[in-house]
Length: 282
Image (cartoon, rainbow, N blue to C red; front, side, top):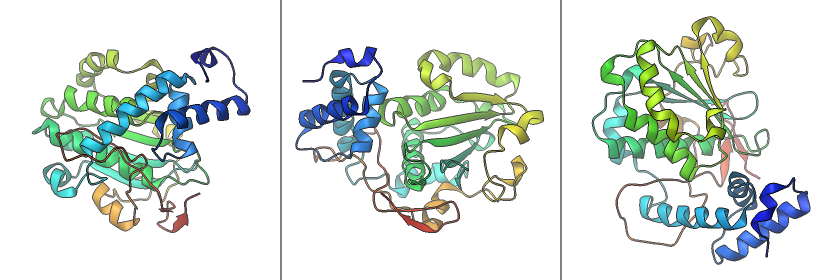
């Protein structure tokens, strides 16, 4: 049995595979990919005990929150109609690029907002280029320009990081906070204690003057015009249809009847590249 002492040493590939097999045996009869098991193990520094508990919790959560395997668009219609979240394609590393235009966010129903967050994570994962981005990381941009007091929503911002950390570990590559005004500072400081150190390190605050350099890893045909690129903003639900995203569960938990709100899911079959061409997932 692989014990948690692994977490204090640098592991060889053989030891990583041994930890993976130990975790797989604990989760039988669940069918989970090697990539997914390794993701949860990395999140817990290869403590099989901790990774097993978290993944088991996630599987039950997923069965409760996504009984049909995905968030249905009719469940989040009000949120989608605000046209505030966009999915552009992939950056130069094959990471899906999501954009949130915060001044379009009008808080109305925390439960629906949470389901939108899950829907967006699921769509983003499905868009990832498996060849260039084997770890399944993602790129996010929060456009904070021109936000007003009515756009500030500590619950929604905390929800983004909570869902990310609890159910999509090791998925964030970088999150760019662009053009943050002074009014955002208080909200950020209130949410910061709930964000893990590893996640905080991936959040970058960027000013307008540094925009071109900070976003240079995103091709012009993917980067929106509002950031100096050539692409139009593509609403996330339209991106799902344009790219033909296969939004099937990445971890299927025990089958259960629908319960209340809570999230995750991912790609399985075919994945489109940033130009919308479909590439086989490996």
